[in-house]
Amino acid sequence: MADGGNVIFKFMGDDSKLKSTLGGIGSVTKTALKGLAVGTAAVAAGFTAIVKASVQARGELEQLEGGVNKIFGDSANAVVANAEKAFKTAGISANQYMQQVTSFSASLIQSLGGDTAKAAKIADQAIIDMADNANTFGSSMESIQNAYQGFAKQNYTMLDNLKLGYGGTKTEMERLLADAQKLTGIKYDIKNLGDVYQAIHVIQEELKITGTTAQEAEKTLTGSIASTKAAWENFLSGSGDLGQVVESAGVALDNIIRIVDEAVPTIANQISEHLPQLVELGIKLIGSIGEGILKNMPTLMKTM
Image (cartoon, one colour):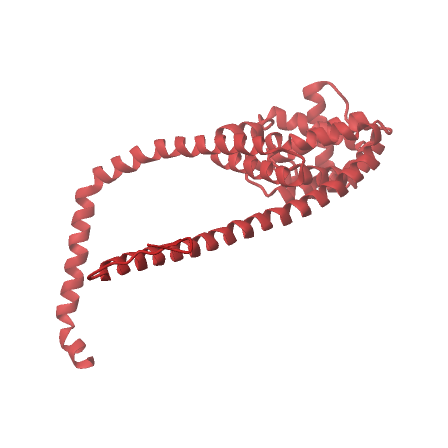
């Protein structure tokens, strides 16, 4: 019946089932709303964390680009461009790239008579060489960076960190330069940091080390994950876009699928081949446990 614009339903007889059903709907709705609230809070918290990380990364990028502009002048754009693609070439973010560049660029530019364009090119080559060396020999990137920074100060004690077959002395660095000269016919001056970095590149090229990081970013799981991580950091800082993250993650997923496809048949074959021995071992193990329990039952009962 109608009452002032409202519709009122009256039920005759037992309405307990209706009440139970309506109560159940109310309970489900309340639970769903609670779940929605929790999910919304989680999404909001995740978004807040991303925004916070992005603000920090963008602040670092702004400061680092300022340093690059000051040091490289007209060639700064080339350095920034190299930094933005370093997630593929060196497996590091743009911020990490510029941090490394600024750690030795002043000495490098000075050794090149102020030629910032050439310095930008050699610096890019040096950073890629560092990554290739670390990936090839499994060394920590930090130890390689420390060696390169030491060379900028004419300190060669960490030359052996590169694992190229040369010890950590000035004499050994001179030997490396002489070996590079034999390969290229170019004379390298130990007092010139640009020459030192280029000579190291020649030796690594001879040892087939160059380009390994870029190859690993495409063909190996570890390399593709490192590339994806760096692309994500670039996205947060604003030096890259989400498309690069998606592309890198796609390559990583392909590598995961490839490894699983390679691993599963091998594992299945091994299990199948050794299944009788595994079953026998299991039976012996169960028998030994049972025998041990029976043997020590009096002691166990007494303890209980």
